Image 1 (cartoon, helix red, strand yellow):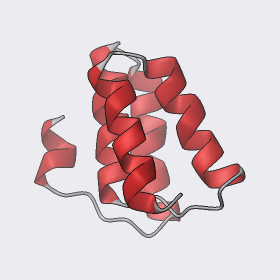
Image 2 (cartoon, one colour):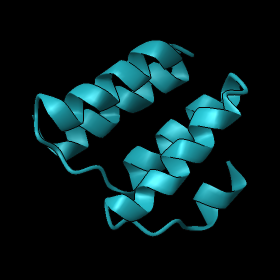
Image 3 (tube, rainbow, N blue to C red):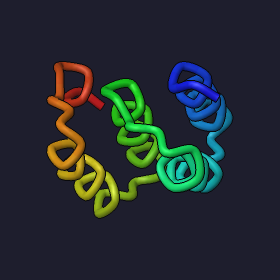
Length: 79
């Protein structure tokens, strides 16, 4: 799969409130498929984690953006 397909799958998990599978798929994107997450990836994760009030992992995800060289945008800050 390519990054667009992976982001689409993440967004599907997000829209169905299946946050655990969203997180599991994100981890698989990185470990199994060797994908580099982009801004869409991170914004989807941060918003999904916020939906379940997982502020600890929201912050960890936000901080990991720098590790991946991804700059937050206005969407990141409003999720």
